[in-house]
Length: 545
Figure (cartoon, helix red, strand yellow):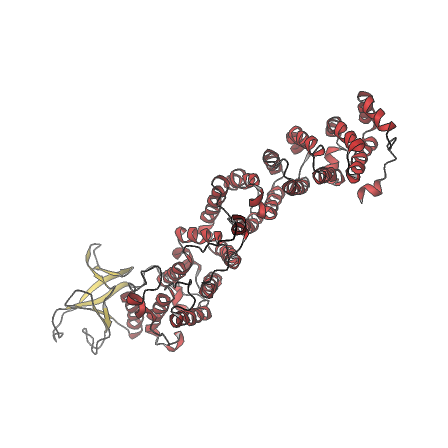
């Protein structure tokens, strides 16, 4: 079971004495003060007041265990000599266990300012961080584990220049070994069960991941846009992503620690990495982001908002070769699948303002259409009324003349009709009919053929044919292009399907069909005198096949 989470690692009453000289006098008088540790600073005050007496800054301090406690045999002391001060602060607790625990916290706090500061490894200023930390976590004394963890995290925060794989080979290998050790202990390390150590872990992860992404240069701009790139730093990044996934997947780390330690800024920077051209990195990000969304209930709204920002940038300021939309939509699909009905206004806004407009992007941006298609189906499954806005949006952004993209739109449109009710179809009937007249007359035979396949869909058939008020208007609007295709189209499949569609209306709506024949006698006369002659009997088995 995970330990109880405390916001402050040191909090409570302790004994205190300030040593000014080299030796502690025998009659040294200690004080009882209330202490709270905030970041690396110890805030001390009198027990019965709220006014802080003074602050001890432990960053960069020297922390030791004295040979003899100031308060006598009943007390256990830790000495802190702050940087730039001549005196020594003595902190006392009433048990050795308490003293050892606080000693470890103070050791870690004293070394908290030794993080690498340069963007890439600088031997002159950072070589001391690469000292071989050969001691394993469980081989170190209990009170030194927090310090050991911090030292390993600081070592692993160093970034190297991978443009020359042979440079600093020894240092890179030291970091690789340390990262592998962290991978092995990340999911069950007790020291990660406090907020500060968890933040240190996230800082190490951020120092490695949040970087300028590598670019690729092909022989032509088109080749550069289409080409994925393998990041040479993946030797280290792979282990960092594995650590990130483990600390959010571990059942040994309290969820409260994760919730308090994970900032929105960290999540925003992490999600921005979906722009990476390395497919391995995008896959790791997808798995980890999904896990974080499941664990951090307090950050779910923020994650969805960040997703919306990514979509908005792609819609209004599209970046060249943004490869992460499909992975984000994969995550979003699982999120939408868990939405409760009725759907909240926030989720409706996401659909209307961000997801539907993604349909309008040019053909080269539609590599994610399969995932977008699935999200639309999930929304329609939650509430059939969404089909009205989705279909209207698709018809608005219809890629006229772009056959591959029209094929994708028609497939999505057909799947949406599984959820369209009569009252929904009534709202979109007119605009849908205008678009379908254009599709039946499309210059590309595949577009026309795919549109005619709609009449073989039982859900669409029930609305566009068997529902009299819709069937009549559909037949009246489509009769001219259908007869024209039957008589003049060069492709045999389009001719046959156009003729079969007319047959379907003749069987299902004989009165309406007779009225249309009387109003278009010249067209039907041409049809009867053509090589096809009269429409043959309707074969329901062939049609359903």
